[in-house]
Length: 147
Image (cartoon, rainbow, N blue to C red; front, side, top):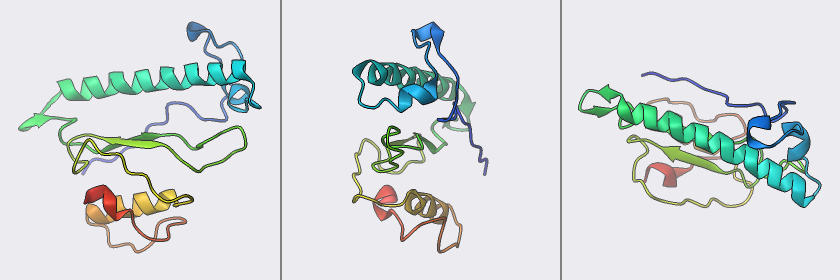
């Protein structure tokens, strides 16, 4: 089993993105205060990050691995640490899972409000053989994920 994490950018980052027209710091545009201009800048940053993620997936899709590609034999989860960074709300937390190991694909699973992200990580760990009963703030497993 190969496992890794990759952080594209910390949400606390003071980084700017002049190459996409965002010269204000990422952290300050994420705390947009419902200002339409800051929201638009935050959307640009998030769109840029998703574009980089898509390029990463394209690379994995192009790399052979046994009877398929590395992407075919992977489970990759992409998301952020905040559902709405303005008030530091982690709920709803958007995540997307891709790759051939994701189970039934092309689904949208909407979990009840305030479902801890630990429930997803616990379900994933158990699916791949871990015998742990809890993970972080988990209160159960996201059974729908691998159904």
